[in-house]
Length: 63
Image (tube, rainbow, N blue to C red; front, side):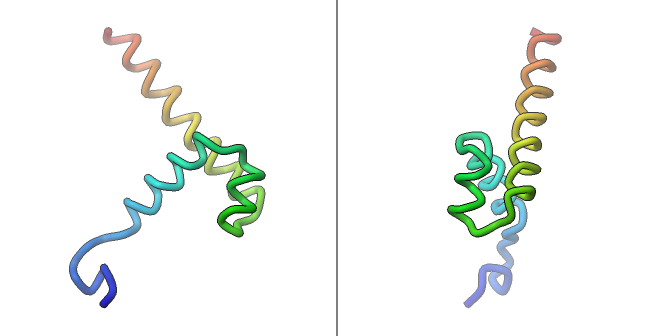
């Protein structure tokens, strides 16, 4: 039985996992590991960096 059939959404979990991986691995390694194009891995890495940079800037501004 598929997770979606059970009412469990998977897209948010997938995206969260990919951003976590992109933050920890170089894009070339992630692209090789998950068989995705290097440019896709680079985009995920950019998203991961942007997310943390924005988060940390917000924390510093309010902290």
